Amino acid sequence: MSKFNQSYVITMSDIVREGAEILREKTKELTLPPTEEDKEELLCMLQYLKNSQEPSLAKKHKLRPGVGISANQIGLNKRMFAAFIKGQNGNNFEHMLINPKIISHSTSMIYLPDSEGCLSIDRPVIGFVPRYQRITVKAFDINGKEVRIKLKDYEAIVFQHEIDHLNGILFPDHINSTNPFQLPENMDIKPL
Image (tube, rainbow, N blue to C red; front, top):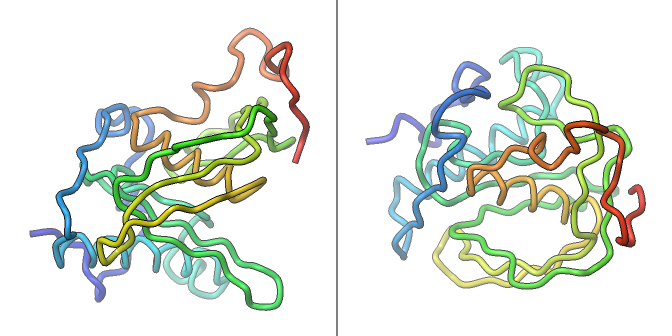
């Protein structure tokens, strides 16, 4: 039985760090409908993200801010992740997804000028991480209902980052190792 449930608060000590084998494994798909344990774990992951973006709670629990977290980042070999992005006027962007898959993407690409960050990577990483500007993701929600989500710009970057986690890929893998600020040639790439 998982220790992660709605009454459990994920802390930074629960986050699996770079170098752990589970971060390099392709996670296992969940059978549907999701179990109560799966649901509790997803809710706990989403709550971590909400807490980490609330300054008083982040300080109290010593949390690094995050906008996405995958199950393998808390040691679970399960193909699921949560995302939470505070929006303007209280329009928050939140998802808890099971067995996500990118089913289409744009040819245009974008990148964050200051690189990406990751709860599992404690060292500074510089360089451009090219991502598709628009994607469509097929997944299942916390109740096991199939969903298709169209995303663009920052939200698309977050989802690609988390889906990479579920495939054993970390964002530094996308950075050119000899020239971190070199972008792929012959591509329509712009900063976000």
